[in-house]
Image (cartoon, one colour):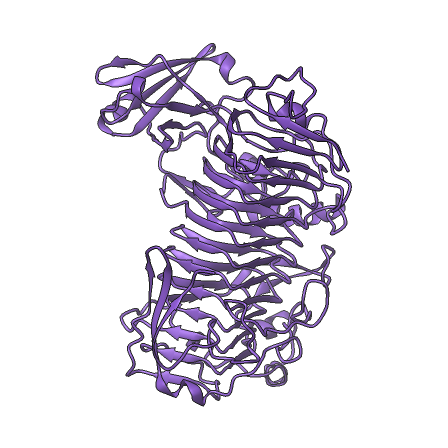
Length: 622
């Protein structure tokens, strides 16, 4: 029953904001909209950074920002630049200081914690675009001359001079844009809750590098709040990250790279403790919904966040071309990169052609990754220094590296792994775990290796790989005890002591009823499985108007007596001692497959419940 404001390129900010007399800028409406109000944005390109001033009250009294139905509303962090002149075969433009205001992206270095390898040490957040296509920053005018589709900028007191190589294109006949704003839609203050952002296209923001130990920014972001819904948007060409649900500045900001007094790991550990001290809890932070968005062509992340993405749902998004230009490199690049994704569900997404598909780092407790399709990535899924319970079920991992597992306490059920699996222990970083379904800290632990569960998966091997850390299957766990009882017996037999005893005994591995094809290797303690060295899986993902999985399955697949996995039959992680259950604490039943079909009707091995012996061609579009 709130007010409805309209925004139009034919409007005026002195108007009343009605449909007949709309505002001219989204920012004008964002400055006055209150709980229960709706802001409808009509067709056009809006070159501004929108910062909602007020918060919604609850789920039923939110502030809604939406594109008008069947109209294309675009928010850009860029401005059009004209007046280019030719100089020695390249184009030059002078941009006055006034265009940038307080933030000049061509003076803002890409820098911060965990950024380890820019191609050139002087890369900036500023970018140049020709007809919507991003150009490459190089390190001098001479490089611009030699490199097509490149640019270089010099910043002076009153102007910025941009040198560009448009590869023969006439800038007077093209649209040349440079980004001038850090964000497109981002509250300036924290605690702006219950906002909906729906149906926009956003592009060309000069976002900064956003590690977990700094204030994090995205082209579209929630800035340490609760209850946002981000849906049905098209987000592309953010210099670093598209959507941010990450931390604010009070818990630290690039303290490692600024001071070097402690390791970055130590600062990150302090960030987790500081967040709890500063009021990070389920009642005030997180619980966002990010759904049905198309996200592509970003340098760092499609979705990023430390701490602030807890208790959220991320589903039915299409994320691609993230971090694959290799203009810079750091340990925070992925289609989805989340720290402390407590009780967060990531489902039904298609993530492809990224440097890394999904990276769950630190405190992925209660996190579930289910029914996602990954392909064409350098790596599909990386889970790092967390202690469970985290659940990975009904996914299709089809890239060269399916899983990088530097964690413990995980359950991997009904997936297909078509690539390598990298396993390793991490005994030099003790990372936090929490009370069940809570942000309150319970303890810290190192990753001893193992304490994982693999049930009813399909592993596709590659007999030509001999890397000591890479496996096709579960033979990394060879020699592990198969139960907690056997593990305790080995600990007791190892002698007296405390910490050193646990370093010397491998944790349990719970592995049963998997299929191994193309020389993929099983765990030596697995009692029931299918190992086929004669069937060539010929597993492949094919793209066209539709996406298909093609795979050959051994004929004895029907010999495995599968079961519906649930809270009651998935063993509890050793460190956290929390069960595998739903985020609301109810019993979990894995009774649905990749497509949402009922496994009680047919419960096949792998993500597709009705997969058959022999050749399968499965349409993956949902």
